[in-house]
Image (cartoon, rainbow, N blue to C red; front, side, top):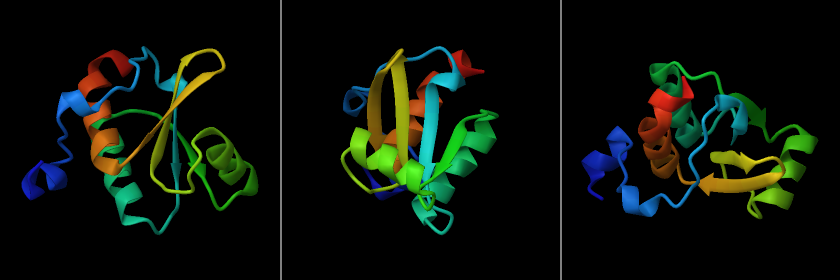
Length: 108
């Protein structure tokens, strides 16, 4: 991936093993207010017109869910619920943005 791809939020589809979903209700973005990578993802969410749940990890219950489910404290992280109770945790802002762009038409 080139630096220009990174700034645009493009990532090769082959890097995206995340399951496809058909509703934004199956997604949640774990974030922090001051995180520039989170801001980058949130700007794309707004650009795409998606209404995704936001979970600030400064709140203990969201941090605990992220650590327990995803295994890392790193943000941004997109939680994808492919089936009830079955979650996939997608880290890295470029991968999250590529996933959202790829699936935006279905998620609206």
